[in-house]
Image 1 (tube, rainbow, N blue to C red):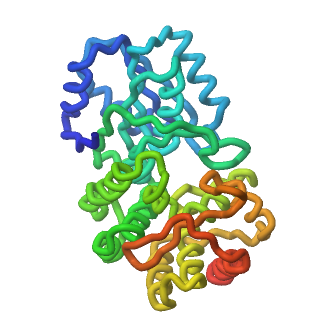
Image 2 (image 1 turned 180 degrees about the vertical axis):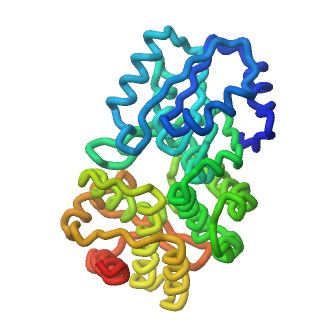
Length: 348
């Protein structure tokens, strides 16, 4: 399913030529329209009519209003069930585009062409689509797999460093939950840039794909991919509601620090392991000021996390570097201690 593109994008052209699509729609945001679409169109060879659909950039656009606008546009342009939607962009574009495609006329085919590190190593893989609801992350969505995922690492050269490092958080997570060597290789990188990271992208993608292959619908082991996301999503949602959005990877890094300390408090890892993990995450990510959010606000979001059942907060926690437990229920006091730990650690 995952294919590394050559400079001519021949694999995409071959895929389209083998099919009988009635029309092609290419979903971009304003950034990928400027920096990635020209190269994509310059290599696209097809006689099938295509249209460009553009949305504004940002997590704020991943909502039902944007989805509805796209459904209406597809309807006005008479897209039928033989149409193809190409999602050319980061996590917002692939999440939103996949959701729109999987629900329009009960489903049309789509492919993902991720343009950010976050999307390459995480968002575009695994068949999860979704939109945010009332500032809750990915509260509405479907399990729908793209026909193909085409990865062109040179797109990373168009990214600001902040966006690049956001995706690096998911790569670090993959190592922490499933592959100690991958983690150790990544933390040897002193200055993460596109050139330094590129060689490790296939391994990170493979880790996620292998987990998804075992547990497609997140009944068991796929839940380990949520490490760092339970607290991370809560903070990301609060920042979004406060109209001070942070990048997903920044939230995940914060969440991994809190949940690594929580793993220690719950007796799953020793202090030395927790310290090493936290210190290395801190090397790459600036602290986020969460002093404006009290525990009550954070717990309100934690209790509404879609991974929960019977009003019990389910965490995925480290049991070692390269191993992770899921559906772990923590003491409320330890959750609060992990939040206090982060506030103290970040100096806010």
